[in-house]
Length: 122
Image (cartoon, rainbow, N blue to C red; front, side):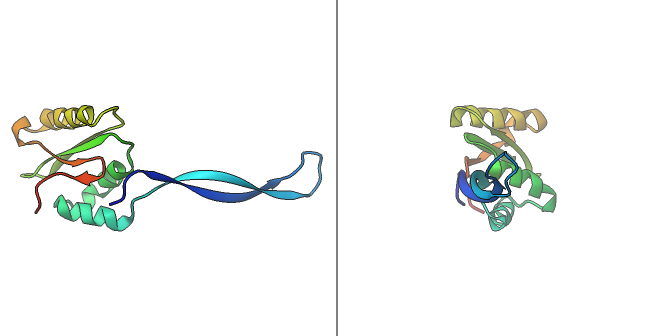
């Protein structure tokens, strides 16, 4: 999986003058697009033993800002993510804390840091 986001130039025509002239020029506007693909979500869902029910959450996690971490309980496939932190340690702690509030904390494990898999292989 690729990580982060990439600025892609997007061109559109805008009026060149505000004096009523019908001249047009091209304006360059930069749009930030995700650098992950739908197949990345499919691969991650498979690795997480996820279902279509988890798709929106996984897409949201992949597009979330760094620093981020994903905690999971393998027994029931519960997932909790923390993102937008200043350090990966803070993101890890938030993901584990959030997971531990919903499931027994000892069953929660970090499986992703930013867009990198760090969990056990299946």
